[in-house]
Length: 164
Image (cartoon, rainbow, N blue to C red; front, side, top):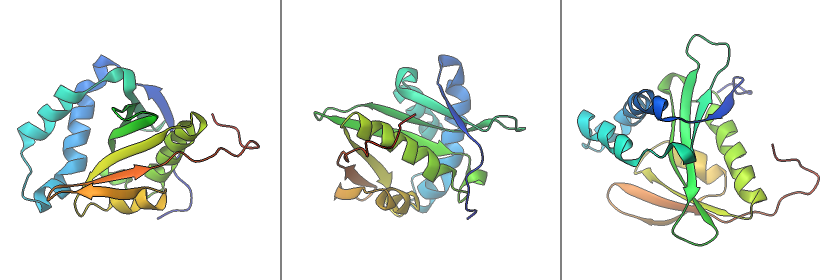
């Protein structure tokens, strides 16, 4: 893994982003779903179409590159009080292991912390992404044969650190 993530930016998602993000999700999830014996190309795409909420989704871009679409993530109010649900956090597989996921997750968590909000998510059993989340303070709450459900309490914000 390189020491610095590539230059990246977040922008609000739009309805026009949906199909590109559907394909991104299918590519990003395929290895883990195949390992679990659960990959269905139609279903993995349809679930994204059904759950897509552009008002809570950000697109990760690599400005000035041949393929600027790098990934996405959604951060939406959860059913639990003072909690956000992080979902649909996907990066193009070619970008894994370069520090981009760490940088994007850190930025999302800084915003949640600034608002005093906890964050929860689920990750597929055996996914390498679980290590990323645990390095950032997520701990398991429960699990089933397919998913691990993780939670991270809000952390106090250092008053000397600005949140962008």
